[in-house]
Length: 331
Image (cartoon, rainbow, N blue to C red; front, side, top):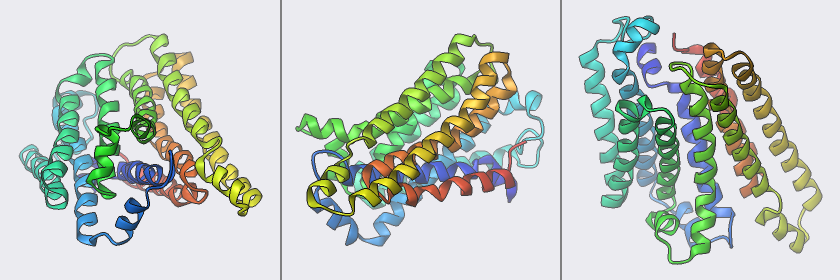
């Protein structure tokens, strides 16, 4: 059982949960104003519909991870022989069937939740993941761009939790302002994932220091943009005008958001700097692991932008990610 969890990188499900939660919170509480219809619909939503969408999201991630190892099985026989597939602990045909079922299951679950639009959204995410696994990741920079697009598309898929009109508002809205604010978080996630993947690619291919530097700058830009969203967030302006518990709320939110930002910079920055200074492939791999945890911390910043308690809600996913990752660590 542990090898199946290793195959799908089960610890990474915490990053998907944080991405989806950050997207929903961001859509509710950030931008020109809160759309009461969306919030009311979520409160009265059919639990089965939400359940299907959450299942689809988890299966999309799991299928992408499984196909990633299936695509790399021959390479892993030489550089990672202890992993579940090259070691023979999991049989290749069984893994292929499981990966296919997870991919199909994700599309079917999305179809049951939101009809053709849900299926199309899930199929888009799955297609991007497969393109990355089998083609794009072998091409420098194109692979990192494709992975970034996959994460951003998955975040947009989470808008279906609110309703199909939320996804349409982000992608095909007539109001350009609405488009800009809804897509701000997927853009930040895109930049962070792009930079992280650029650095992590150097674990398995020759690279130059300027690529490590560029990847770090992309991640730093994403963090800066997230913090920029926090400055003057709508809830801060609203509470200031309404005379709410402004000083206490701001202080608590600042503590969570700045703490998350500081820990992100520390935990991701150290292996990144070692990769830059020593051109170490091992440190590039450590940057990836730390960077995935850092993605949750980035989402804490975004959630704190949306609501003063938002960051607190997501912060618990970080130790969960670390604990599960340590328990079922990939060889």
